[in-house]
Image (cartoon, rainbow, N blue to C red; front, side, top):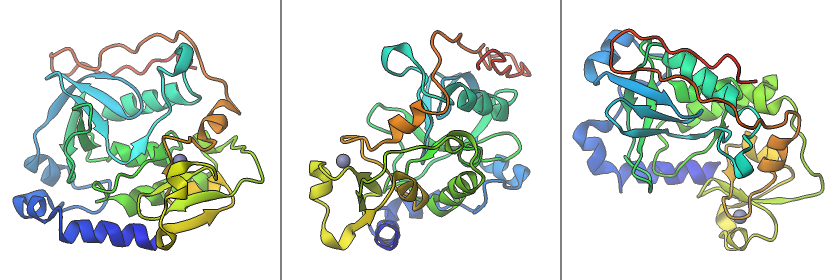
Amino acid sequence: MTGFLRFSRLLGKGLCLSVIVLGMLPAIRSPRVQADRFQARRKHLLVRRVIDGDTILLLNGKLVRYIGIDAPEIDHCNGVAEAYAFEARRLNCRLIGNGGVFLEQDHQRHDRYGRLLAYVYNDEGLMINASLLQAGLAYLFPHRCNLRYYKLLLGRQQEAMDAKKGIWKFWSEPTGITYIGNLKSGRFHLPGCPMGKRVAPANRCMLRSAWDAFYRGLSPCRLCQPPMAVCKQQGRPGSRNMPRPPPVHSGKAGRPCIPNGNSK
Ligand SMILES: [Zn+2]
């Protein structure tokens, strides 16, 4: 990870310096912060609906995508959810509680779909991004311009992997594959992937398993899709036609978030 981290430091010193000067540098280094201090600096936002484990819809109509994680998809191919997708949404819903969140953004503020990119904190100052990783209900998915809490998030994922929680519990993957890791982009590739072949030698590392790649903080290439999807389909099957959870907040203060109790 040395090259990857070095790259992030360069970004912090150069490209993103102007953003830091504008006051984006966080005062906190832990997922749990002093709630009063944190809340005093940020606007409290109400959540209309929890879409899945890494996306929420705010009452103001804006979608928020959690930085640094990738939760199993509920609306996956053929309407079949990936394993642990409903557990991830349920935990997300439970942590949000009565529908209030605080957002902290990094250098890149929106993704290509126009969604806000944020570290999302509940009323108690708990960073939900980190909690989902710690529960094994999301994968670390770093983006090179949003690495403020990369080491913290990686640590949470490693904790879940060591404890074999959630998606790591029934982990199984094909053997005999050597993956190509890119320490600069933070992605790993199947041996035949054209993007993997273009990785500069200085940034390349060879990995004997997808597990090792995840443990080192790399995430799967979107193009060649290393066996992450296979692993998700093993252990626990996906579910079809699960009901949507109730709205978290309809605009009236104090309405509780009710996790979907049938989502198994
Ligand atoms: Zn690839």
